Length: 245
Image (cartoon, rainbow, N blue to C red; front, side, top):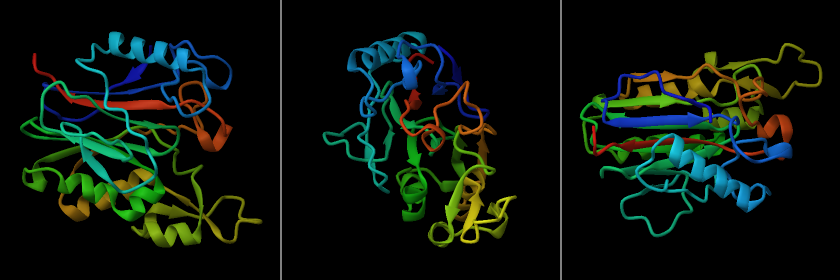
């Protein structure tokens, strides 16, 4: 299977990856490394892909798969018994926090000590309602010690939103641009999720932030994109504290 490692200065005991769509068993629109059970793919194929994920990345446990609902809620993965959340965090070794995406921004967090991790599904609704702030608030360390990385999402040349969404997201003017062909787009703007995420983190004091430069919409070979394809699979972004490091 194919995966991406964050370009961030996390402690070596913190392991983090984002999968691509390559190297799995699913067919048709789910080809081939679909990890989502909720998108219409055959369950047997998804379980086969998840088994390969565990093997290839040497996961210490089954990821804590969330039933993501575009909320702003995060859960303690160490204690979770319900899973309708869009982010999770852990302070225990070998608990794998995970979120699935196919255009939304996956945000991974840890700290300088490497004793806490979090995974966040930051679509525009969750971002507008404060899921990034809620995930940061779950950390017990000083905010300045948090390290953040945003994985592949729909890029700033393809994420077209209405001005009402822009009003909810807020952020700097530089995070928005008019579409190059503005005919018929008078109430639309292009939004930069990477920049909007960084702005929210910086406002809380998290300045150690890096991100992928990939666009899930443009890179059809490597990534699923809901906005491009409609029905499609899901990538996963995973993070955990390794007990053996």
